[in-house]
Image (cartoon, rainbow, N blue to C red; front, side, top):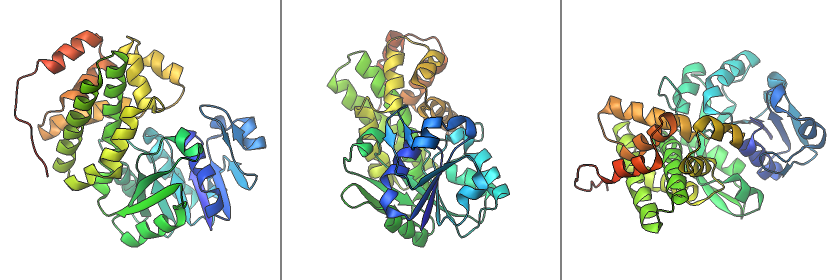
Length: 333
């Protein structure tokens, strides 16, 4: 079998490395400007993480040849580029029977569409699955075990991807039919991870960390069930599992963004210094717009939106969150 990975970023290269022995042929596609000489010639990169790919992995900027004869096409591009890549896939001759697996976590702006909605709009006949879960790339590259969900409206597609991409002892995959819940859990938790890094940098303590985790989860569930998700999905790998991992680890890019915001740095400087995509930045805008549309409250996410897009100070932000009107704690399950 052939696997094609679209996106030569950190997670895309990590997946190519992880799945090397699962496929007879692996191709990594990236835009020419994103492919370093070291990656092309030596199958190696050191930024933002060190990854050494096997000799059999082909690196190319030719999209048409990269997807030719691939049974699984794994899309790991930034969410802002998913629509454009799908348009190019259509031109490049992607076949409806090829399984497209999206591993990008985010919400498209300004449409507020989930990635599966974007893909289906451009490629309506495509077999499609979503891969999401607690998958910090650095730990995966270190050989540490984790698990994730493969979600699809077609369970045969989900099971095909599950068996093809499961790596015994390292990468355990579960199927799920709730595409909405899996996608929203993986996307919205990035905003709470920014809040977690922010709180840690301000030395607010473990009580505050626990508060942010639970109140952040309440916001994720509140938004998701209003958009059609099964609440139980949000307490699984793609929701609570991913939330715990990203809110607890400096290896998370979103956590790192929050930490730098807590130091008083401005978002443009942070992203320039980070040198890679942190999806939670744009998702903070998306979740606030979704919440306004749904007429529901998302105070933690709104605070992060303010931290990213306004000049509010860390102290003012904390005061605003802690001194809100008192209310009853909601229950979902």
